[in-house]
Length: 293
Image 1 (cartoon, rainbow, N blue to C red):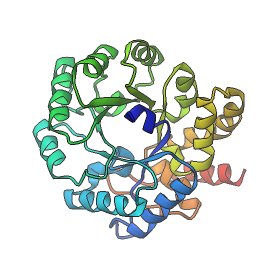
Image 2 (image 1 turned 180 degrees about the horizontal axis):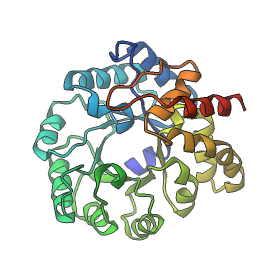
Image 3 (image 1 turned 180 degrees about the vertical axis):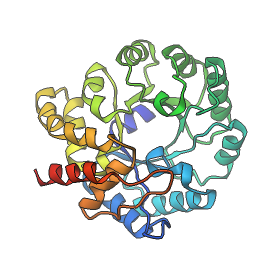
């Protein structure tokens, strides 16, 4: 079974809960994982940007991956995020991280370096050759500072073995449609934008890797399943209810927004690591009002 067949639907980019002392809160992480699976999401992503990976040290990352596999216990597929802007270091991580139970590796294109399209291509080609698991590309120019063009994506999809899919978070619908038009038959293409998931699935995407599903796993994953069945009128009803939540989650910073929702739901403590700070009081008040509604 191809990755495209196994990863239809909603994947959740898991947050990393912290204690008041800003240590990783594994008890809360376990509760979050259970809530996601019980809510009906199709798969989980550990060590994504939403998990505050820039402020986790190497040992914390290893501990989180191991704990996630133990807690999930094969109930749903798990993807491990291994991304960054030092190709050689990432190759080393691909050899050292416990990936035997992972279905794939999600890797964001290099940030800050701002490589050329050829640099992005060669970076992923090197990762794919080193990875024991299929690589899912991740284009998020709002964070990396460099867009990965449709041409580069298609070149990687067609020319490089072990590259199996992509999370597309450019927000560029035309670029997404260009990839959908010309990508290989078994290539997985998922949305990386909660607010665009419904229209992008309508264009042909296979699902979404979501931030919002951390707080609304049942509602969001049902919206995605309805969209994949082309029942867009029913999907729109749910999506309309979530639109204000999407805005609040990304009003200041991710994951401060979604963590505020989850803290109000009693899932986690509302703690983030610098340089990220909790939501301002004004936006947090809007989160409370939204949840009351």
